Image (cartoon, rainbow, N blue to C red; front, side, top):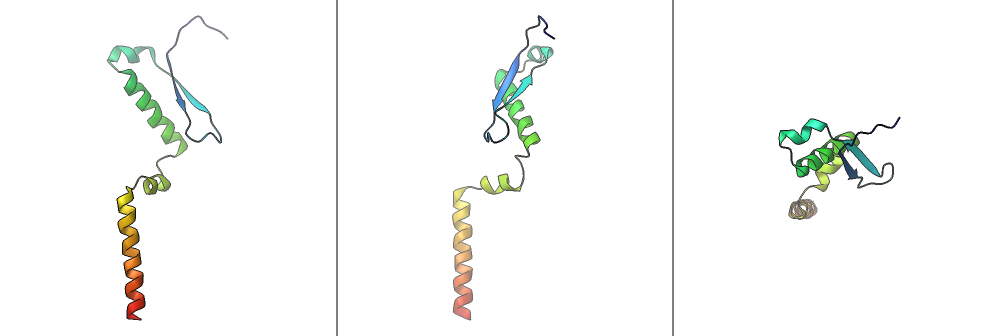
Length: 88
């Protein structure tokens, strides 16, 4: 069915296009009247899309660690291995 109503939408591209290309969010008519900026709409759409795809799991936590922390953890593991070999 086609209606003669103009609607605002937010289109979010998928970072992993194996299953989905885009997510389309239809914006409520009263959202613009509440002082919501377009940037806030896009940020909220991305947050909701991440929740539905499970983007906040354990994998995301490991990938979000800064490189310096990975370096310190690697040096610590190497140091422990060296210490164990030296003591035995």
